Image 1 (spheres, rainbow, N blue to C red):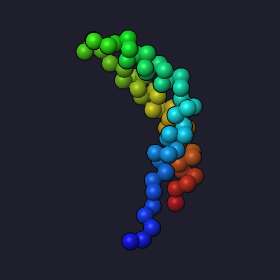
Image 2 (cartoon, rainbow, N blue to C red):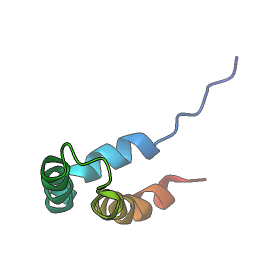
Image 3 (tube, rainbow, N blue to C red):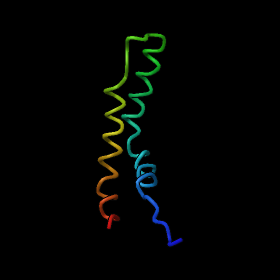
Length: 66
């Protein structure tokens, strides 16, 4: 088979995660705080974390796309 192209997205996101420690810690604290409360959720903190990762990764990802 021809050379298979690899998707750089996962590697770029992993490289960005250390830049997003503050939102990650906020998410982890929320998860601990709501433990045992089925009606509670940390969706906002989760999305804040991934927004940070995406904002960091986007310029890097678009620079390597064909």
